[in-house]
Image (cartoon, rainbow, N blue to C red):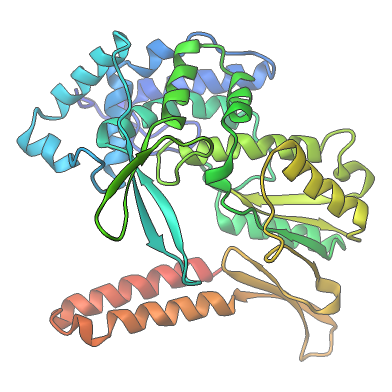
Length: 395
């Protein structure tokens, strides 16, 4: 079931996803063009494209690259490829289950990963089977919603990255918009209301079989183990677990409508000449003056209409014209006085928190806990961390 010719494996995907078969890329291109040409069109025949064997195989190859942990069933990619039925049989069985509408998602394994501030971030790990189906759906619906997304959104999108978000902020600052509303949404991924998220999906998707897949994933039980080793299973009432293949797209779809209202005829982009730059759930609003009307609009819209919670302890207004610094995506942006006497310039560099995390990571690698690691291996690990950090902060 692998591509047999060079032409069939040519990476020509319209959204820049690599190593997709030519037929799958052409399918995505057609869906994206249709969505672009008809902004109000609702797609009603998507399900049969999702369970196509070539789409499922491409989905498997895409998630295989991520090297994620096993879900609640304990099955890993290596098990499928080496000890179980093999990739070909795995894809065939999944194709038949989807076609016969027998597919049901398993529970999502919940783990907690430590955060730099001492807390933890909940992470959901679906089974390999569920990840493949989610990726297959993503491959089909992604070009449809990408046709609608605004240029102010940069997170978890093909061809977009954090450096482009910083470029957008610099561009708006150069226009004199130096009052910045730096927003922080509390537990965004866990608090997205299901009913309103489904309404956002239905704006573009009319195929009830595809919508049922989304509902099943949103309502999939969460399997969690406490400190004593006891396992509990609960059904979520809101949110889309971080860690799922489909979660970043769902998060973008929901906040996309906040951007639509922001730039709409009655939004602050019109009456306050404000601009928005968003990277997933992190966003800033830039304006020449952050008055109470603008702040009230943002907060009432997010908490009232979108049922989200603003973390007021971390949300603030940054007056960059007064020399205050904006921390965004690991960088600090601040106007500094030039030593050459030519006025102020915008300095952009790693934030103090990013520097502290970097040093702590190196300390952990070089600690006595890793005294058993051979020196060449340790050098490679340190170089990998340093090079990755350098590539990101070389902006």
